[in-house]
Length: 282
Image (cartoon, rainbow, N blue to C red):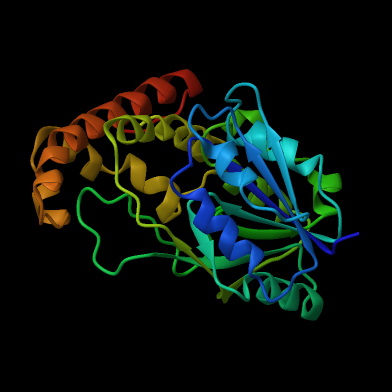
């Protein structure tokens, strides 16, 4: 039985998942199985996975898109071994990613290990889907690992956060049982990906899960609480975006009105969910 299970969920990630899988298969620690959950993609994600002729890969294809919580829970029903590692289909782990996580587990009494996530390019612009976690304490499943028995104690990912913050919710429940440690050498790179109109507008929906999280955990961290700051309201009514993002190409300028629309939608989701959850957020 492999010592580690790696779970990658993917939804329409045909353009990025091959590089992610290639990096996982080249790990210096090779006693693992890779569980890829294609969450109802309507592109060639599954076909990209099937091109890899490696017995360590198990592909699960959902008939329809179920959301990240449900998809990760499906992955968890197929794990084996002592540790479960998570990354995303648009991330590239360093070759010693698994070894760095296992070393922390075997030298510390902890429930999980969080790694560091950096963006693939050094100078992103407004149209880039920029994402970094350089310091930790964000607990995103682009770079997290847990002892397998943790899930027997706290359960899996909750559907209350089926499309966002499901990983942070899990971490907060796990921390009631034991420590989560940060290892900056457990490194993954987020691939250089551009925003699309659809992905940018869908990103606004994350606001409602943030409001739920603030209510449940009273979490005022930078990751969660920033969404309620007046800055986002200003984005919807004043061109503050010009002062915060690098604009170098025509595609950056073309994305500006969509960013304004996202800011307005984000604010609407905040207010709507705040009313539903009976919490005061401006």
